Amino acid sequence: MGIENAHKLIVNCLPLNESERQAFAKAARDVPQKFVGDESRRGDMVWSASVPEELRAEATAVIGNFPAGDAGQYKRLEWLQTFSAGVDAYVRPGVLPHGVMITNATGAYGRSVAEHMFAMMWAVMKNFGRYGFNQREHRWQDEGSALSPEGGIALVIGTGDIGSHFGRLAQSVGMHTFGVRRHPEVRAEGIEKMYGFERLDALLPLADVVVMAVPRSPQTHHLLDAARLGKLKSTAVVINAGRGDAIDADALAVALREGRIHGAGLDVTEPEPLPAEHPLWGEPRCLITPHVAGGNHLEETSEQIIRIALHNVSRYAKQQELLNLVSR
Ligand SMILES: NC(=O)C1=CN([C@@H]2O[C@H](COP(=O)(O)OP(=O)(O)OC[C@H]3O[C@@H](n4cnc5c(N)ncnc54)[C@H](O)[C@@H]3O)[C@@H](O)[C@H]2O)C=CC1
Ligand SMILES: O=C(O)C(=O)[C@H](O)COP(=O)(O)O
Image 1 (cartoon, rainbow, N blue to C red):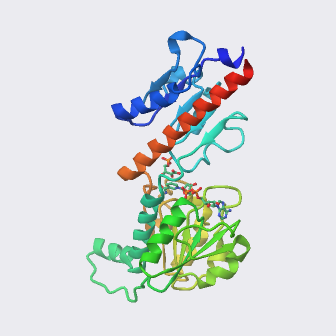
Image 2: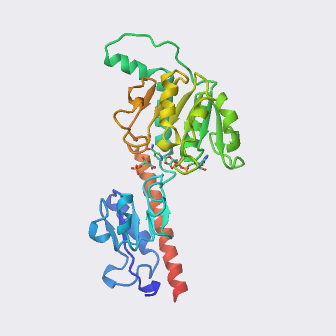
């Protein structure tokens, strides 16, 4: 069957109002001859909160996340536009057939996640985790020295959308912001000094706050391990809202229990949920939130997710038009 005869079906799982639906339908219709084949399904876009089971084998494009465990059911999938920034669930070997294009929603979450991390940093610096434990026990107890961000160094690992937003917030309260990336010549807003990844070990002892905003990958697995945690100051604070496995949670629990760092804030853990018996749950120096930094969308986040997806529908439509032209 030639490409021009292939029936295309986009399943759109974003929660949209009527005018947003129309914008998507228009983006998909803009290119003539795009969805050819079955005349009754021309330009088809199905709207649904999740992909209906009977359409999974037929869908050529999905806008929205589906459980990675269901990926095998998507026999005709060409393109997945996630509403998450992280795509780690789909890029593992064997999950999606070779050649499926994935685009994500990076650019939508920066402010939301960075604000969450910033609030965590401040709360950990002011010992709120420990005061929270005391409050539950009705214990009126001074927890001693608190910290101030002003003049301190925030070391941002993962200087993309989230890291850059965090950098700007940190600068607004007088922090110096250092970033670590594989290509240090590429600058990021909010990051004062950018270093190559090979400088990480030398920078850790200088950091007052270590901010982790990296995707899950073999290179980021246990990036902050026992040896690197051991390089931190006793007053250092570690914040992670990227993916949980970037930190060795057992090593972190030991560092916190022994008071070798001031505290930590985690929005992500490995695994999720963090098992009930994990020592981090009982650690007053550790604030834990259940992966909500980006999930509790700010209105701005939802708008950005829709904007990115809409833009990519247009690009997909144009790509289909080109494919149709070359196949003629
Ligand atoms: N907690 C939450 O609710 C949320 C968590 N996330 C997580 O945060 C991650 C980052 O999101 P964005 O900032 O939007 O993505 P992004 O793609 O804009 O930034 C990621 C940055 O990490 C860098 N990076 C990748 N591997 C690296 C390595 N080995 N060493 C140093 N830097 C490395 C990339 O070069 C990029 O600059 C996502 O992949 C996702 O896992 C994203 C949204 C919400
Ligand atoms: O965008 C990401 O990556 C996130 O972690 C968001 O919180 C949304 O994630 P999921 O709902 O896909 O876990």
